[in-house]
Length: 340
Length: 237
Image 1 (tube, each protein chain N blue to C red):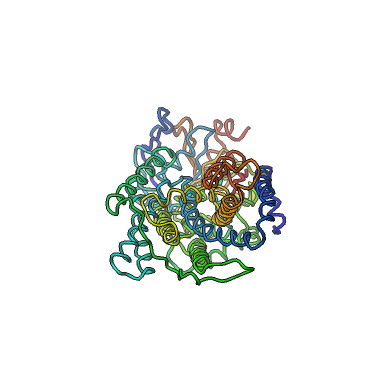
Image 2 (image 1 turned 90 degrees about the vertical axis):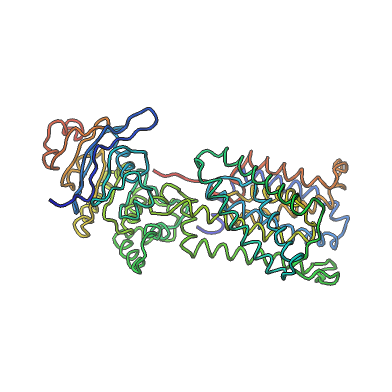
């Protein structure tokens, strides 16, 4: 199939509706954008890219588990939060170099993810989602309680893995593109490459794709499905920690710091398609861009001035709702075609 | 007497309150093609699923003398049983090549690529479409893929669940001729469950007739073909 055919096949009524909705938002933003000038606009695009990269990493962690089990792991954001605290402990308290601390924290939370799968998820009937969803909520609450008990509820300074001095930035068209932003996007790109390599080039990746496609057939070719899913949980755990440590310098670290970000990541994954890694990355940058624009310009849109900066969070929820109603597969997710 | 490759004794299975298999006995010897005939709901699919550990079962299933009753499906497959389920059971989003690679998932030898070469020569349509998603193949091509994938594991025992289902008559004939060839050239032992008695009995050495969860008739394929009850029920004569 050519690219044009592929795009056409995916452009069903549902996705046309979603693109239309995005277009309305964009059109409403045009007057204030023109008012503000190109430099301010460019700055807001740059500001959104870093959030986009972080949402993407977190969204991919959700997608990995969803692809294989059609399950939303509501503990993912707090697994990331807990890993970030561990990282803080290693680097701020223990004096470890920040990158080493990040890798160590990723490894620990990968092991934690694998353990959660083995002990709390695998014993349950996979066709009944409710018990497992409730368990992921429970794990989220427990992690938050432990983090609060160990590290307290006040916001902690978190070191950035990138240069953050005021002048560590490029200037493009009068707007500033910070090294941190470029670094975060680079890390996300590298991580995508690693994931695609694992999925496409390794045996465990092949098994993972098999389980995602058809669990029963995966068993029939001898794939040990439990261990394969466990691998997915471990990978998701490590990734989400990586994403969270990229952003904690900016947001500061406390037990609830990932909650809001988790919602944006979920919106990104839903928009892009919960079973599409590439789609969720695009979804992440779209959500971040819309968020940045609405936060920056939203109050100048006639009739919307009363919505303050939390407007973006409302939009994220609305987006999740609209996607699930009109195009549950998202913009780039797959719908199965059964053939006889 | 040598040990049968597959020996099933007093096999029973139920879905909730419904008893599907009521203590059936059968065996498949190495190199044989055995067919189990039966109408819809007779328990054919359940029989194969029970052999593969995919349903709770009573009784015993022995593979080459070893008790595999109730073992995990992935472990039974690793012992050399390949199962082509009803409705093919391919991986629709994955390419034809990836489907074949998954067939060889349990193998550790270095001849996997040579086998892919072999099966895409036996089924040229699969070679032509090797990079396409399996879900885009026609029903007949998917059935070929399912068989090729099963053969990629170099099984000792190949289980085929109604391979003719949903296929055009000419495609079915071609498919059964290939099964006969496979058995003749590679010596693969096969257990086929079918409603299409005519073609199945043509390539099988022995057969059983399953009715309402019980085996009511057993014998050489030739005898079954001429049996009045079988002719009436399954051969439409």
